Length: 266
Image (tube, rainbow, N blue to C red):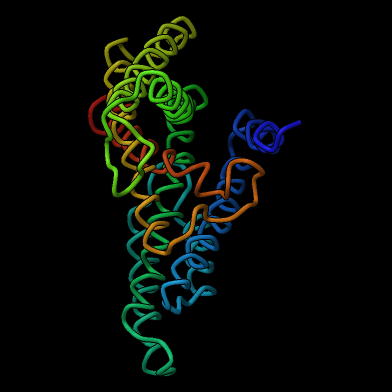
């Protein structure tokens, strides 16, 4: 069995957690967030940035326990971020080995990984969230797969050669089309299951996710390229680390969450 298939098999427990939803998904995503933050902090340390890891992890745990409940608790989110910034800014005063860049990257790791990842839980907590949360994953994963194979067989023009040399314009278009198709098909399924969202919304979410999840992939690539590493870690055989596997999910989750909140108003 190749490493890539072995790595895919290691994701089966996550799929089961996604089916279970509720508290299992909440704390499963929290654990993935902590692991993702660890990978991020490890990579930026290669640039000589001395992140305050323990504070980042405590921020993540407090955020999921206090803020990520039924709906979005803005008061707790504001409280956690404010207290975290306060504590982080005190650290260089108490320990001169840390500076402002260290503090900024510690906070950024929390926002980029933990807060973005929490969109999965927040969508799951919505009405019909046990169906809607799948949009985040199927759109991103089908987009990645369609982009890869379209680029492999039809790719001619480079998309962002300085960021990700193998990605092509044709592959990007194929990825967006793949996301649109799978989201529209999922919409037909969801409507049959009684989810009261018009079909065109699923198509629009396919477009948005198809575009944004590629930005998520490219954004992660810029960070790795800056640190001169190929993968965030080798945790998942053939796939890299948590952030390598879920980088597109981070962006897809945010755009789906806010589309459902402010456009669909579910």
